[in-house]
Length: 245
Ligand SMILES: [Mg+2]
Image (cartoon, rainbow, N blue to C red; front, side, top):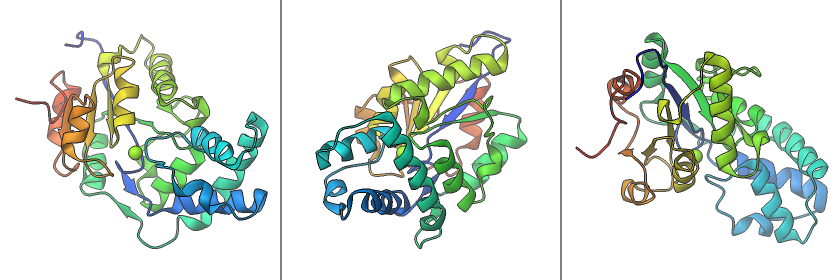
């Protein structure tokens, strides 16, 4: 249980958890890669992008293309990706996932500390959430409690960055048990657990409840519909939502 003066922070993943971007990210990456290297759809064809950080996606694509990875090239490709995403995010099929908007309203109204822990680059996450008109529930400055793709290729590094920013922001050490990752993939689960952060798996992405539980999620929800009371109970010191009784 948290100590009496500790604050608890909820860290949301973006794709498959808050929104379904309907392939906008993949299309944007294909555009920027085609601009750089010519036709490259095959390089992305076999990749399961969900749960991967944008930097790791770029590395894997370059490997698939037989190109050497370097950080400057990765930065340039991701800058181009964000430019492409500004258009592609307007495409059809985008949706905010069930219950998310109401949940964020309720958590914000209760004064809960919300953050992001996402493999997106910051501007990519912001574009996706802005498309669903839910970006204003989160902070975007350098002090925001968040982890993004620029914090590292491995998802574990995003969790570490979010914990460190939480500590800086709250003015006292953010204990891993006082953070809660909410995500849709086994990668979210393993990254959080690597730091002792509890995880709620939400089965609104590619993975079902059983797969998320098998991956080690502390709690599993089929969607975020009606999840506000359980998440606020966790903020107040309770167990993660969706934990086995
Ligand atoms: Mg996700």
